[in-house]
Amino acid sequence: MMQLDVPLWTSAELRAGCGIASARPWYADRLDIAGQKVMPGTLYVALGHGDDVLDVSEALSRGAIAALVDNRQAGLGGDDPRLVHVDNTETVLRQMAVKARDRAPATRVAVLGDMRGAVTAILAQVFGLDVEVQAADEGLAPSVRIALALARLERSARYGLFDLEADADLIGLIAPHVVLVGAGGVQGVDGLLSALPKEAVLVVDITDKAAASFARRAVEDGRQVMTVSMTRKAAVRPAKIIEHSHCTCLSADIDGVPVTYKVGIAGADWVALSLMILAAVKAADADLGRAALCLAGLGSALNDDMEESDWAEGPDASQWATARRALAE
Image (cartoon, rainbow, N blue to C red; front, side, top):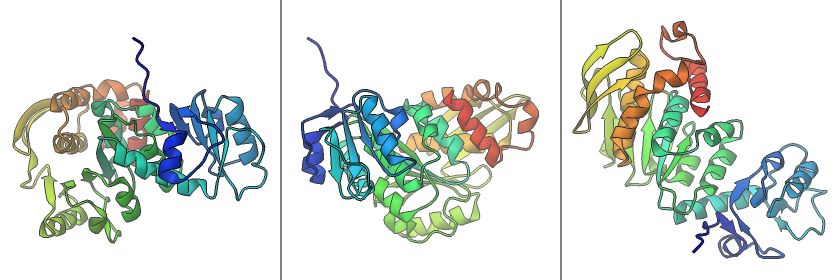
């Protein structure tokens, strides 16, 4: 007997969860906010980016099953039964994000800090997520990008992965089970700890002073904290490191679990990054073996895009971006 996939969104669910009525029933397998990316079966949400009228028209012409449009935007009317008029599409997208978050059994992982681009790209591979989708949405406003990522969570999703600058409101929206805090992850942000669910596991690089201070406050608040450090006493730390010209081999204690693995690029920064990744995988109760394989293959994913000399001083912000693009290919 043919097995049909469960749709991502339905008109009935949108009516029940958001109070939005459609002219006809529909079932959507995809969700997008860019008309040129719409495929048949997509629920399109017009968020006021670019030429709204043309974007809606393109979405409909490309086979959108329904289009949510904002009543406040002139020129988006019409009698196409696929048009669904709402007061504010961004508000509806956020409502959809909460609904999708709560219905999926996914372990949600949030990544904060300067290294979040590369960490997210590698974790996406470990979790079996679409790296290209993660990279494609980078240009969106954070509030839109996070809401869209949540609203796209499949009903049976095992993992949800979100990288962002520290923002108490967005952390509250994600309600993560695991939070990675690296260098620069919590500086100048108030209310972040109170925005986190009490049961969240915080994975913190205590080499960074601000992050270490955040970890201490979290422990005092009764939170679960998994500390990570190359040089300090921590729950996740290297036990033995053997450096080679193009890679690093090491054994490490990952919160009580001994792991021996290889990082496919040489350099202390990449070893530190690998420890954060393995800590996140352990906190998410995911596959440490798969994570080790991804780290071992890191060099082959990046060497085609960058010269070896580019990594001599360790990755900076631009190199993180290049790493993420390479991993998305």
